Image (cartoon, rainbow, N blue to C red):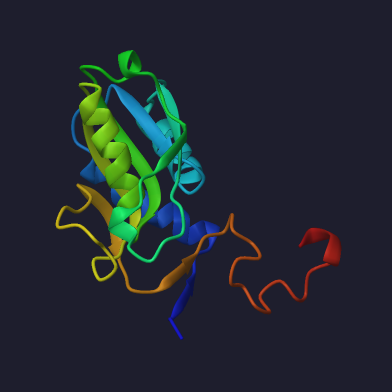
Length: 165
């Protein structure tokens, strides 16, 4: 069984505080990958006063040969919103790297300059030789973020009122 790590809101603040000093220069846009990049991306946008915030939603089909699966972009900014912009792409975790590298490729194809920031980088799971430009921690654990209540949290919320779960 894979080791699990439960990240608290305080832990999340510390992870974002670890990322912020790494982000040098001015970013023209922030692109949050849904759903995992929304919370940390919002915190980064607020901290760096980035007001040009975009979102991308990507889905991969479940197949055995993961590198052969083509993504479906459920939502993605138009090319003219990315062209000639330094874009900070934010997600919670880089596992296989498929989603982030698909987003990175779309931004590059649009003429943008993407850089990737994640809270957790899992080099042992990555299917790519590239890695995120910025990351707060390296891990091999199954991460449970505070906004993911109920995901792999056997017993953690047992003491709460059922209406709060």
